[in-house]
Length: 112
Image (cartoon, rainbow, N blue to C red; front, side, top):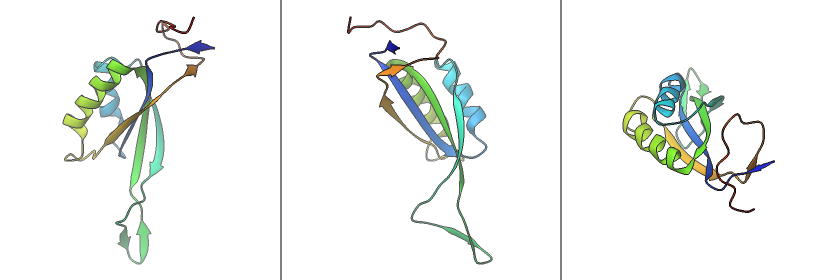
């Protein structure tokens, strides 16, 4: 199992239909790839159509990237697909301590 010091799990939550554009932004900023998860949003506002509550469809784009790459991706996504756009995306990172099965060059292991 590989240990990675500066690896981040970058989550980008966007309105459905925008994942491909966001993945292209991420790749152009240094991501090697991404995983897209289908989801639905639930918040304080609900849209009701003919008495049926309709929740907004979302896509979650997940990338495992170096911290610096995550910062670049988040800046580009905020500018081009952020809250004021049709994608209405938000993003956040979480630390990754260990991972296996990723075809990437490991970041330096500073624990050894």
